Image (cartoon, rainbow, N blue to C red; front, side, top):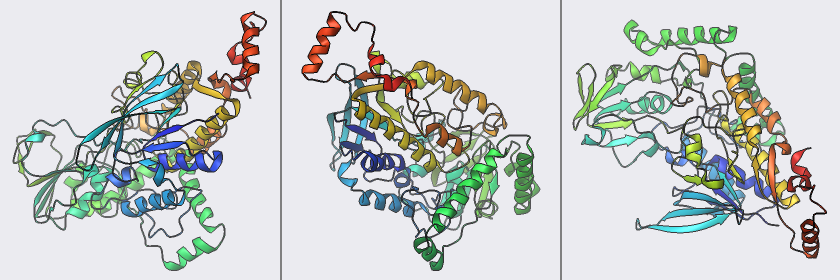
Length: 530
């Protein structure tokens, strides 16, 4: 039996899945559908000045493809994208990728036990071609940072100057010598603002909520260090392990539990650092948060606070009322005329697959299923959607470590599931409802005491009802334990009927009732126990 796999997205998740299908299963019957013109996912889309990773380079890479040549501790976006491109070339993935191809919908065909996809392929002339495709297994690797979030501000479309979103940056637009308004000051805002200060006439930063800021200890990797990483066995792996263990250990010791010793110590340290950096008491009040450290993603930057205090920078904390053709008007009635707007407003994280119409068994829609309380067993699979997996789905993102560690855990799990399907000639599997419910209940229970839930802030980690649905509430090590081997009893199979003489003999036996007491699931005993 052969299985075909459709992978949505050619970012870190999709590439990892494709590589492991090749390495562990020798499976090459897969296609990667990528909506952009090149691979890299969020690292291809984000081209704004200063774009870089806030996770150490040696941890933000595949464990099976270490890179001894990282230029610095925290590498810029272009270098990260080139890393993923080089890995893709090494494993021959380019020929499997269909660029400028967007998956519009996916419908489960229960009769044929496969997914029917509708694709939009963008041509060089801008013409969209509609194409159909099929696959036995559908793997979503769209990630949570693939759809830019545009704030619902009245008049946003009325602004007559250029409007740039950090996730859709146009490098042909020059902001030199202009008055620029920046809406948003979280991860992308804190990176782009220091880059804009030296080139703009005036920078107006519109802040809704302050963020905790800690210096980013970035440094260039000297040649001798690269030499050591490349030629001395075990050194690079040891360094990666240290980076990983430090983050996981801090979490395990309670760094993300508000009121704990480590959490209080971190808050005091962060507050002291920010007070030392911010000289103006009024600015201190505006910039230092009053919620627990870690409730929102911590900003790692050594130049953001100095950029905010630059003479040509104006910090506005008054809420935005509307935007007109000339600039921004705040709730207090103050006008801020600007020549260009920069939207550093992040991504649609709670509905990352909302642009794809996914329909499972009996007409069940994934968008409707996830509208209020998104859930997925181990963050990967949902009952009612056979042969469907999602990487970095609900409850499997990270707020304290590198998501690539989670990606590898999930890919290894999914590959084991596919391997078992092949070995047992199983056409389709789906998680049992009771297993998903039990998992979700445990997740919400564990999340109750975390900083992300009880830290006193509103963040993109939460859905509109206030539940933290984006993150895993334990250590990465514990997730690795949970996903090391699938619990096959938590899944139900559809067995592949062997088209042979024996198959027809068994059919006759079944017809006369000699095997009435056996169900399909009992015949597929592999799926109901270890």
